[in-house]
Length: 421
Image (cartoon, rainbow, N blue to C red; front, side, top):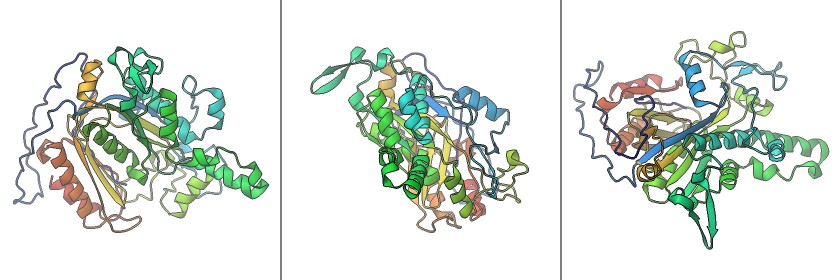
């Protein structure tokens, strides 16, 4: 997967209803190695209808650095590494014995004890990060904004806050409930079918995280999961924003969750020859652009956003994020990423919500090339970049930040694509 990020500005927040300020355009800077014929295109007109503009009003995460977004960000700025030797199981016989393993995770206050013991880590991370995103958006479980009265045949909101029929959940996962799947297979082999838990199928399928979160908070709008490997969360943001843009929802919880640091998960990536084997120095093993790189480092956790009407995947300021998963490409322009609450601007302003960022636009496409390698000519990525910029109404020179993960094949061509921005 490649992730490409365009500009990012810290913490845009509006404490009271009002127009989102327009950020000044960055002066165009000369770029080296750019074709002389590459003219600066005039960006199309951006969306102005507050019902179709999408904003981010809440973020929640579960990470190797804990469950607090600000603390997580501070750790990143300090250059701390959460990578260490695996102690969840005996990894001594694996060629890779380290990962970004979460330790000391607690779901207290977010999942009741009985259910917590049944759930796969993938689902636990989803529920905690999703509810923390709602808290961040001022919509914590039990808050006045989420109170409802039942009025057949529909739900109506108290205080005109949240119409749960128009509130949805879209949390994706690349591998789903891998632990419960692995345990079920082991039970079948060792003890027979009668020892398979009745939760085996429900908890193993990828949409169960979205479903359980919706059941806990009562959101009755669009609810499903997307699984596109490394690009999963970005696709979920893209789809969630589209639901708001099309008028199908006022608010969406969107993001991704993963918990694959178990023997079968690590073993599978080892078999793909995808993991770094720097067991003597795990904290510096992730070095994507280094000439001596030897693979990526596994991690786990969840990130969720709360989205409200404002516009699709280009956030103000302009941050371009491009996920390339060898099969699918995704590009969006955003500001902060994690599990997020996305809303329409109109909806967010009505409830005086904190606005973290605006989503301006995005694009998706497919390399149609290889199962694990991206196209060496970069055609898929460049096309996705262009379409995303067009959808967001952003000119290339307005992009102030790009973030990406390196892959061996085609990285020089991908750099060429970025230079042409």
